[in-house]
Structures are given as C-alpha cells and as structure tokens.
Length: 295
Ligand SMILES: O=C(O)CCC(=O)C(=O)O
Image (cartoon, rainbow, N blue to C red):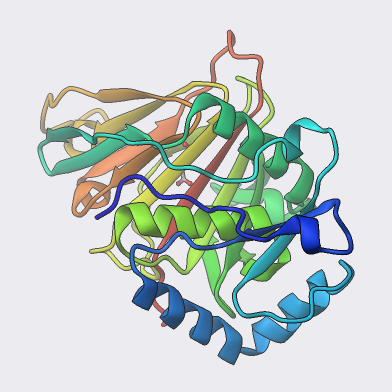
C-alpha cells in the first residue's frame, strides 16, 4: 500500500482559454490499472452524465477522459491548494478486549485547514425531521448537523430515523476524500455519514455502529477536521448497574487530518461517543466512511 499519494493538478492551465480554472484529476489510485478501472466504472454509470452536466458550466472542458473537477483559482484560502496530499504516516495501533483501532494523521495541518474550508463551503446539511432521533418514544433534535452521501438508494437507519444518502457527485470534496480514504485503507466504501459539531456543546452519545445494514467485517474509517475532540470507547460489559466487568475505558484525541479505523470486531463489543466539552470553541467536521450491504 502506498502511503504517500496525491490528488494532483495535471491540467496545463496555460493552454486553457479560461486560465483562471484549474483541473484536479483524481489520480489517487495505487496503480494505473486501478485508475483505468475506476474511470470506466464511473463513465459507464448514469451518474457520470449527471456529473458532466454539473461541471459543464465551466468552459472548454469537452473531453472527460478522467474525472475532472474544477475549482476557481481565486485568492481565497480554499483555493491556495491544488492537491489533497496524503503525508507519509505510520499507524498507531490501539488494542484491547476485542478492540482493534488504528490511528494516524494522514493530512498536514495546512491541507486539513483547506479541506475544512471546502467542507464548510460545499456541504449542505439536512434539516428538520432528518435531524431528529426518538428516545423512549419522544423525538429530539440531535446536538449537531448531519448529512449522508452514498451509492444509489443507500440509507442509514438509526434511533427511529432513516437518513437518505445524496449522490457522491453532488459534492466534489466528499468524493475526493472518499478516494483518498479508499487508497489509504485499501478497500472501497459506499456510504459516508458527515457530522458537523459547531463547538464543544455539540456532541454524539454512546452507541455502537452495529446496524444490520453495515458490513460487520469492513472497517469504519473516521476522518476528522477542525477542532480536536476526545473520542471515548466503553466495553459493553462495563455498562449499567450490573456491569460484568471493569475493563478500562479507552480515549483518543482526534486531531484535524486524522483517520481512525475501527476494525472488526470493535463495534460488536465497544460503544463509542464524542462527549460534550465546554472548553472547545471551534467547528469540527467528521466523516465516517462505511460499507453497507443492500438488504
Ligand atoms: O464525530 C465523531 O468522531 C463520531 C462519529 C460517530 O461516532 C459516528 O458517525 O458513528
């Protein structure tokens, strides 16, 4: 597996009539063969037509030999970078009773800042009933914003709600990050849940990602940007008054640009949460890439 990969700009903008446009080509794949296979599968899908329509507003891009994405080259923070470069990294492994985690910072701080700026600009979150959960028969607003992207027809069911997924091609930064994460992890994901925490008062309660639609053997890849937040794990046997065991909790600070892999069977035995923190003032966006099975 190559741990130093790039989504790089390979378009000769000087010969392009619209010189202010730069093309980002998704050449993040480990080998040329992989890249070609991916291009073919995307070209063959109906989604590719949608994709073309979406980007046809940019002039003179007539040939779609690869997945071309354009960004305006303005003097804004979000446009200074032309690549989502994955740095050389080493996994830190965290293990316990049926707990298997891998953690690493895969983007530099400056790339992470650029990605957060783009996420803030490009991602449109759900509102209304899609941001509610049912607890003991009562509906409550969730303490954060949420949206999901995924393959056709995939939904995420949790706490009485059913979150539909938007198509990947409706948000370039999400699709670019999916490619980065897949190249690092070495497997494909068909769904991502995006959570936005405006500050430390937004949080996520204790739960297991053990829904029946999730492929239990596939890792969940959790990518974080923005404020550093503590992520906590608690073993199933240590919960409640009649806890059977005293297995210690595990906590890990999730830094911007970090990727946390929750591997099988962690989610069967461990609950996780993102507790509220009064002393955190910044925005945080987290993306959990998942593999769902169509039931
Ligand atoms: O924001 C986080 O790091 C937590 C996300 C999470 O637990 C989930 O999506 O299931």
